[in-house]
Amino acid sequence: MAVSIEEKIKKLQKQRDAVILVHNYQLPEVQDIADFTGDSLELSRKASRTDAKVIVFCGVYFMAETASILCPDKKVIMPDTQAGCPMADMLTAADLRKLKAKHPKAVVVGYVNTSAEVKAELDYCCTSSNAVAVVRALADSKEIIFVPDKYLADYVSKQTGIKLIGWNGYCPTHAKIAPEDIKRQKILHPQAKVIVHPECRPEVCAIADEVLSTSQMCVFTKETQAKEIIVGTEVGVIYRMKKDSPDKEFYPVSEAAICPNMKRTTQEKVLWALEDLKEEVQVSDDIRRRARKAIDRMLEIV
Ligand code: 13P
Ligand code: SF4
Image (cartoon, rainbow, N blue to C red; front, side, top):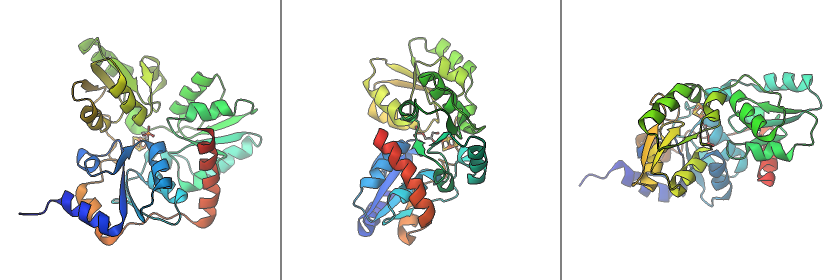
């Protein structure tokens, strides 16, 4: 009988002493071979605590880079290093240095969706699940820079009542979601709860029942009494939700909310990555040391 790709991956994974970490937006076939599936914060935490020699990171580049920053002694490999994040590409370290020069007294908070070079310029890192807590912890600061996501900055600012100095970055996938999409789904499913990601536009966040990170969404959908949920984020997360709660109905706010970069990774590419132990994601020592400080400070707060 022919051996399936999945079986080959499992066998090779043991030989290589590798752990497979998978973001919630990945294709179902990739979620199916995960040792752990989670949001950005959870994946960083898992990476920092694993005993495995090799981390196979199925997500986008900044996530694998974060794992590499946290585990310099491990080999972090990505099945497709072309999987980037357009939002992370909207802010360079030079851009941030200029912004900091304009606001020399400001504390600098950066979303995890940034390059390692940008993280090296930050005082604090944050993710969608803890951005509000991180900024709240800095309430006594005179000025706070929050980059690069202008919509996340708006959401955090409204939640905390703290004015933030932002940047014109955004996620093209979440920016496609319009309030009309939610209204249309609400007419079709009036009993349904609406959950959205804080990368959505302010008009979208304003009419949602909950604004949550991808893993917070998965906890919510498991625990809620509601039988129907309208999901305002990248559609890939619905696979995990359905698996966890087969008795509930999930409706994507928009079928167009697809992150093409998250869909680049396949089982076949994971197998090749394990065979060749490539492509390795590495961060230079100087950048890693500086970026690590911002991540550690975030982890201290949460
Ligand atoms: P989460 O940390 O909520 O999984 O978000 C990551 C991301 O890139 C959302 O677009
Ligand atoms: Fe980046 Fe948006 Fe894709 Fe998340 S969904 S990885 S923010 S482009």
